[in-house]
Structures are given as structure tokens and as C-alpha cells.
Length: 166
Image (cartoon, rainbow, N blue to C red; front, side, top):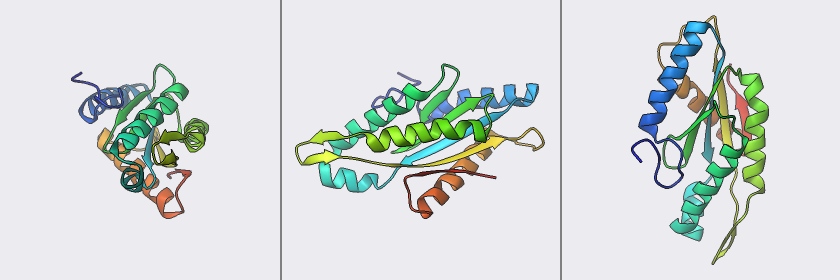
């Protein structure tokens, strides 16, 4: 329980950072690729306001189920904030992470949650970055921050899309 988010069952933010720091150290030591995906549920406040918080909780659970179904056993997913999630992909660059992110995005877009007030549907905005062997990264916070910026650009560009950072 100390390592997982009680609602979604994925790692909580604190433990996500611990695991991600270890993955970054390994990637740096062995000069391996490491990708970070950050995704956010678009207009989640509107979902809670329209369908209620119980429906919002159910959507958070379903979104994480969709994401986990696409991940490899070596991949790490954690809840970063309210409706934001981070995925750490060892031995993966951003181009390799893109099809995975798109499968998650499409799976969530196809998902429907029945509520007393009708069917709820959501989409994701996704940002992907990777650690390149030629750059000096000082912390996992730097990579996650870059992924957050790219995710924000996906939101600015209209939401429900995946963008790769440079």
C-alpha cells in the first residue's frame, strides 16, 4: 500500500520517482535508451462535474487498466497527479514508445463508462521524451518535466493526441 495509489493500483508519485531514478541510473551506466511518457485525461474536471466523482474514479481506474494492458513487465507506470500519469520505458527511445502511446490513447478514446447520467468518454493528451546518450541528464525530474512540457503542447494543439519532444 505504501508504494501504490489506492484508487488506481499503479505506483504512487513518491515510489514512481524512486523506481524511475534507478532506471535512469541503469540507462546512464550502460548507455541505454530510456523513454518517459506523460499523459493526462483531457477535460477531467468537466467529467467530474457532469457525471460525478464516482464516475471520475471509475474512469481513472479504467484508464490505468487500458495503459497497463499495453505495457511490458519492465515498464513502470505511476500516478503523477490527479489525472496525470507517467510511464517509464527502459531500453526504449521516443520513436519506439510512440506506437505504445498511441495504442493507449486509442484504447482510452474507445472506452465508455456507463453512469446514471449517460455514457462518459474521455481522451488523453500524451507527451513522450527520451534520454539520448549524448546528453547529460541530472535527474528523472528533468525528463518528467520535459515530458510534461510536450504533453502540454499536445493539449495546446487540440488534445487527444500524442507528441514526441525533441
